[in-house]
Length: 447
Image 1 (cartoon, rainbow, N blue to C red):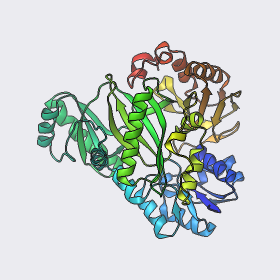
Image 2 (image 1 turned 30 degrees about the horizontal axis):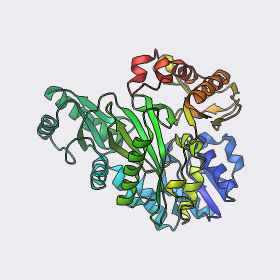
Image 3 (image 1 turned 90 degrees about the vertical axis):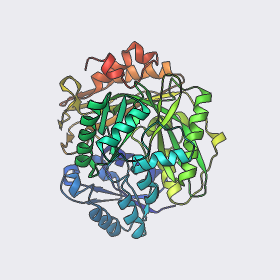
Image 4 (image 1 turned 90 degrees about the horizontal axis):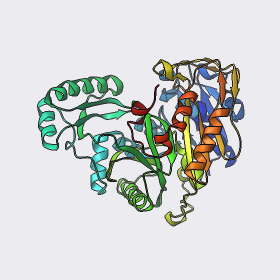
């Protein structure tokens, strides 16, 4: 096991990794920017190192600064958390060159799954169902029209290096295809420095269901059930739950087998998430692989009893998985609400500033992963998420009732948050009935 690791992230996930490492008896070093100098979790680490000014490009995304900090601190491994450099194959490769263990997949694996077109090829080789689409990159408008007419409208244009809904456009005929194709390429170039795109048939109003996987260096792979992430706005997740109300035991087994097959064919190691679209008929299609720990990993932890971050660390240290697929048991239901410093009534405008009061909910099976506190100033430089409220219940109905109570107790002053939106979601009869898809927010909510 490692004796000392560096945490190359900030906020809630930095605190989450720090706690997991401490429980394993591992010393922690946390890097931070000048914008995070007042973060309370810094005092919990064994060491802390400032790596630059608030801007991410000069701190949390600056590979030389992070590697220098790791070498100064004499760590054996780096945990990248999620976001920032967590899926940067160059960073993982630099870590390897410097004889520092990257707590995540191999650089080659990150590169393969980071390109959506290549990821689709891997899925096909693993016999995982994929959405009908182009055979790789589409280089011209004329080629795009040929592909679209072959697979049928509506069409989704996707950036090969995309994520977070950027570089994605929908087209329903030849005219809109040309305009959307050019717009998607332009947006992809601006966002990712890569203008290449590919085409897929649009699965209208699907459910977004993902499978958590864990794989070691010894060829062992397990799937840990699914999470339903269909409650989202502009491709950004708002609520996640496990298990999915739309997945029965038979479908769960099929999706789990597909996810494991993808890992086995690609030689995947560490934690990852295989994302699928589930259509109205119950068919599922591979969408992408997230080669990192996900924001919503706590819901899987609550229904399996596993600490996924500790599992990441143990696997990266070379330990074999200590359980098999038959040992995985799904217990009850868990739901997570992402609490963002945003104003849902004003088109989700970010709301940085000072939290004048932070009164967190509590009680049995209520979990709040957050790094903020009363008096904390939210910096304007980073993602607006300030916490994750997670509840667990013996049944989905029990979890929903517990979530409604917890949201009612949750009180934040000084800034705007998404708590009122989550209260509206949890009271909605369509959501409570489990009969929702990715169009839920636009169709049912006032915000």
